[in-house]
Length: 367
Image (cartoon, rainbow, N blue to C red; front, top):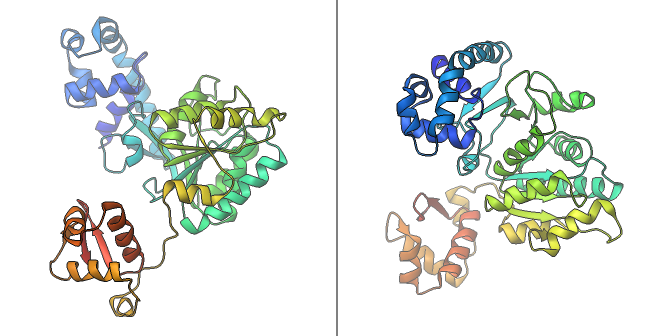
């Protein structure tokens, strides 16, 4: 495992080899290790690589492996958990992002595959209006038990993390530097609390400074880890607009808090709404409606489910499901002579009541 990890790290240390290119190399060569063992001639044949990238790999392989050895030692000594994009523990939502990092360094107790994940971003110069909304939306989201993602920066980011901690929700700060440091340093106390339920993540190796160019790269991870991104406040050229654009590119939902036309800190949000790049958000109900989220109820046991009062339509579905061990939703809809949308809604209601259980492949069975 450590040997494979060594090559994963080394591949990220080759100049000019980004995540998209690295994935091409791994797919063609079979593994990170094999990339370092191939000849320049073969590497040049990899689609999208060519002589320049192949030369960079050959020229820098020794240096990259030395860097990787140091990083591996740091990881082992500091309880850092590296997640490789082909491994089962890699965030499932991030797998679908073409430019997602091949290696994500994490620290803490994080479930990236939580059923609901929300990114909250915004300006560093947050107003009381923005901070108050941030605190309220996180509190109102609490019944859904989402994982809250942000960047641990000043303003809206840290407000989101603090609100998550206050409401006993897991929260993760995605950093624009290595996990051996924290920027801004004033947020060390918040970061320490986050490690207890959530934690920190970065695709940058230790020793990496929070340089300006790292923040847009960091933003793709913030957007990619989530089901939706909420932009609370942003100027017309704010970094949060980059995150919103990336989320749109990943086909994720984006919400923006509207503000006065005269407020500089709301220019970016108003623009997102105006150009249909974000849905206007006033309360948690907007998220619940667009995302079709319902508050999860504790599953009832079979005995309790016997006393659930069913509508005539639900009774029809229950009778159908009682005839077979399991049924596909399209078959249920066809036999019941109901529209697919109605069938889906009824089955979801019955699932929340503990009457039916959904199975892989859009199959359902009685509990």
